Length: 113
Image 1 (tube, rainbow, N blue to C red):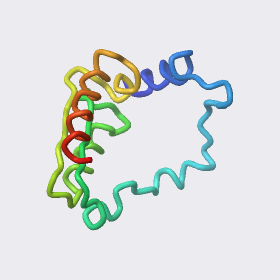
Image 2: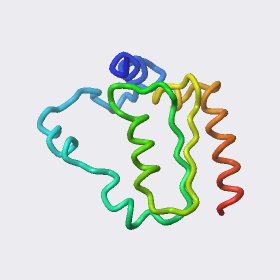
Image 3: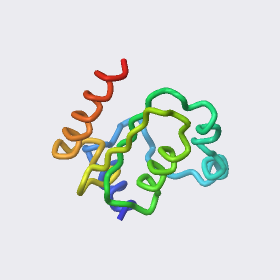
Image 4: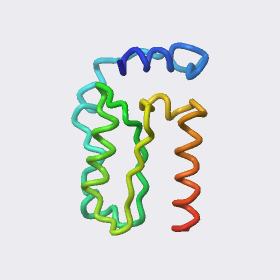
């Protein structure tokens, strides 16, 4: 389902950018596959952390990655918020889901900034 959602988002006016070729280049795939965005999160991520994921786990792993970041982060003040019924792409621009995420972030920033 992620691939269908990605195409719907990036190949339609909803998320399309006229300056983007919107094509996967296999020559750059090795670097992306080997990249660990959470490397050293257990050491360096000590500040307050709010993770937001949709509860619809897709093939690309956004749901799983959110939980992994939450688990690996060293912060003593961390929270994960799961938006029911939302996919990764729904959290980009669907008001029903983004409103919930923004409400959570508003509270988080009010408490931590």
